[in-house]
Image (cartoon, rainbow, N blue to C red; front, side):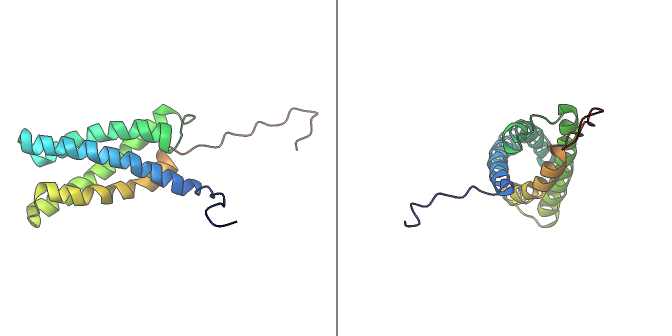
Length: 152
């Protein structure tokens, strides 16, 4: 039996999640960067405001796809996952905004190039908090055994 005939081992769950998170992040990046570019170049909106608009639209897309597909968090309460995801995205946005401002205002990097470099970095920084906090599956409490029954 050669290596082509051997069955493939499934990816470790965290790696599979990271790949799905990357696909969602890629869609968010395309959507967000497209919105950002339209706002900056076509509508001549200030780049900080353009970034805000792009992040809101990307965050909505990301929340829906990450909740349903990446983390399969169907059993996680929307109230908790929504505000937690919003907190992570807010931190990511503020980090992105600070880096973008520094690159454009202090280093003189062109706005679109700066954002193209910063977006993937910030994306990677959000995976662990979203995995472990925003969409974390909480263990359900174990119900105590009824009197007179044995627990196994």
